[in-house]
Length: 367
Image (tube, rainbow, N blue to C red; front, side, top):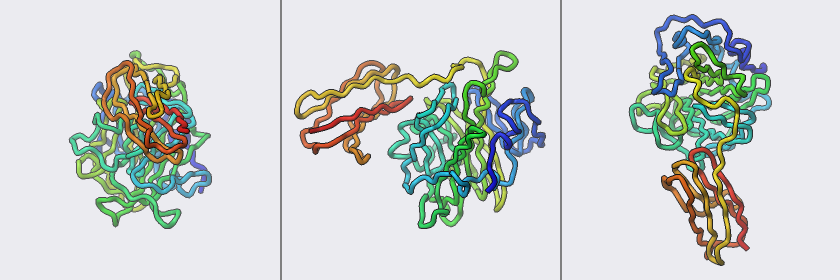
């Protein structure tokens, strides 16, 4: 298969100047607003939501130009049920004012979504919220890119059958994630093929434009092939994005209908106030200390800089969940909990603190 380059697909460059794709506006488009967190979304059947500045052309068919499941160097996520795959991002990505930097975890769900929310793991979320609209929603997962959220059946006896693949294009500095030949829990006889393309990079992809606004070319593209779904109804898959709080977001209100060998693309990007950080900086860390109190207890202390939902879990060396010590909303400040180890076998364990903006791990050896 030919080498895929998003720079070519997006107009030859990550720079904003490009040839606008002039298509009659007969489909669906939503402009950036305070409600969406100043993100916009439009599809390949719509004009862009604003005239200036001009945006590069949308990705164009055929779908095979973007498909990566057969591409040399692509990685197939291992067979798993609803548990997301923990992907270590190789470069920075800017989303809703937060920089996610190299080495941080993005969760790839077999159920059609991506997230930087540590609460995505290990349980997973196989179905979108039963609300109108389904996005935004304050319940986990947040920091969400919902490509086509539904209950899918990944895995199978053949390498080419119902799997999730990812490929990082170093030339385009873009991540491709493809849900290939997926079977839906609602319509298992039908096969869904769709993908996300995320444009990674530093602050050169953030540009100040007229009026003191900022335009981000950390573009997100959702591409659909052999897919039929009315994406905005609660009984059907959800499509959209939301921020770390689950209060700002944007969801696709059109209908995704594609036939065999067809092509449908949605673009998502930011255009709004220049009120966010400009430099790629790491997320603030949460202090966590683990100490032995007595033969029967391990003390775990941590400090939250902001109120947050918190999960404090203990895993053994094989990754098996041993205990959930906290699963609650906590105020900012100092917190302490004791883990009773009187009946815990000797060995290596990992205390994992998950909160809104990251996860923190401490190794514990019980002798």
